[in-house]
Image 1: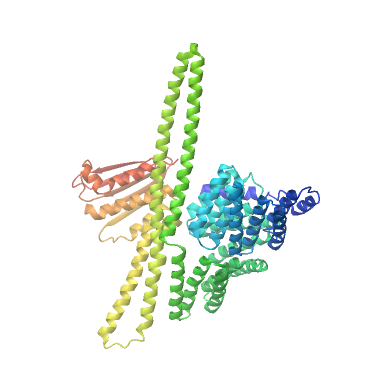
Image 2 (image 1 turned 60 degrees about the horizontal axis):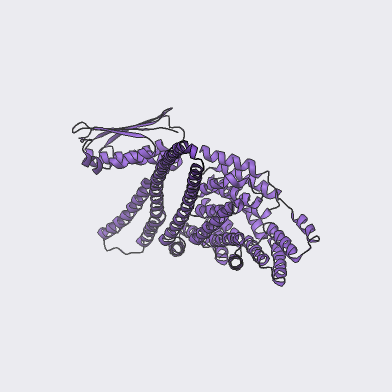
Length: 640
């Protein structure tokens, strides 16, 4: 929480002071002083780039002028830049297929001319096209390739643009930790650039992340900073994004009138730029707002608008979301047939957007990128080490009289390198352990989401259809009717069971309220007639680090499950205490116990897994148990 607050304050203070490094009017004045066609083409391209967010139609006009001059003068790099400007301007107008066509042409020129900067920016434009058309694996692929080029050329602005685009992809996939991590990686370099649009994108994405985490106060504060920046930098088109996010914050805070006001402000701006994708999003949000207000007729009209606009702009994610909400609107309007047909269309579209193959490809792309990055760093370290050893031996050969001191220095250097290598190995082991735990938690989240949003929704739809048929079926007798009602009851129990399993895999209390609430929610679900559990907590009013909360919750969950499965206990005491030294946790039962020195039993009931998780937090865990005397698990985790 403190890290995110620092991020929020840093962005707010830094971004609002930024302005264009060079105005459009100054660039037009330079045209009269241009002495060569190449200089004229470059100025037109800079004008088009500046105008892309202010007046995309004028940007297209100037970029076409530059393109024509570049072709006439056989200036291929200028031609590629003009094509790229046309791509960016058409992105602003939500003409994604056209923007992608220009970006691909620019990429061909960049590859032929070996212009790495043009190639990287073309990849960013291709990534933005795929993001807007819900091709997430292709968007990540393009973004990672662009980052690799920008990092090699030490172009901070390009690295930031690429990571912001990828952050928006992960945000749309509801992978908020990864989205926020990418934004944090941009902070060390963001004060080196002077492009308001880039900083507007950082602000907008961060505000969305806070909104999705229900941190509405922080999100609204960032939105207001973004609106001021757009006004200062004459980027009215991007004010729409902040109005939209403000409206969503108000909507989920049940301030419906304010929400509608800001949705309409956003719609007015997007309509003036004919941005069909953003218009589709706003109609979708207006439909959701009407659903929350139980205005089902308005909801259907708004959502049908959203479907039509999303379809015309190739915005598949928006179309899926609109269809999903539309099925609910039909359901609430007592039209089960339309509800079921619309829901089937939504799921069919969802399967074409996000599937296991797409997720695997994204993971594979990230793994390749990280591996290549580490390999390059290792080669650089090896080269540096070889260089240092070379200098050392040269000095030893040239200074015979200092041979002894040189040899001593070399041995000392070797020892230091060995210590550094050991430290790096330990660091890599910690990172590997963390990666395994993070991957496990992400998989839990994914499975929980699929159970809740996929299987759970389909079971709900099945129950709805069975209920709809009940009044239409002529039952032979009461026994047949009771059997049918039992079927409905079983489906209802299945829905509850799916919801229970999804919540257990990723408890809402852990995400929203912290460790103590999550543990209490977990033990409240255990039948006290089987196992009576007493919970005592102290000093846990403030949130802990996310990794600490997750690991401690999973360890306590594992301990309780072990007690239920193996101990035969009827009483269990759990204590969680946070003080200046760290967090102390004890789990004690009155069961049959076991020989904690027996290695086979120790590993057989998962206690080794508990030890490795606590070890990841640099903590300690002790097991005190013997046959017939119950079991005590004592955990201590220091707070760094």
